[in-house]
Image (tube, rainbow, N blue to C red):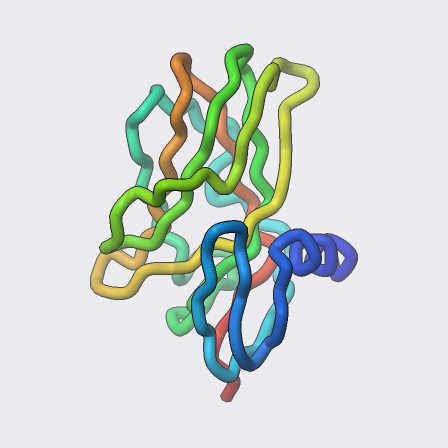
Length: 153
């Protein structure tokens, strides 16, 4: 579990636990934070997603993610899609980003394509991470939480 979180931290290019998180094409301040590993827990598992249809997922309160979490570390798998596709993650209350956080192609069983991402959580009442998959066919999506970032106590 800690090895997976370390891999996620490295792939997300976490610069400093007290200043900023750097993602490709994006930087956001996180303040004084604690990074916490959780037992891998599936938010979605093989969920079929139609092309260009966003899926909102409630995160806080599930899989050990507290209500004050500001971001989550996820392991993503895309399956049953032969054409290339892109997956976008964005916080509730914001617009679809102009860049993808996960690209895939030839994600055919038994070899789904997988990767990791650091995903910011939105505020407000919805408290959902919105997922967007863009491809010309349906893709099966699995999102497994491996950790979170929350303000230090």
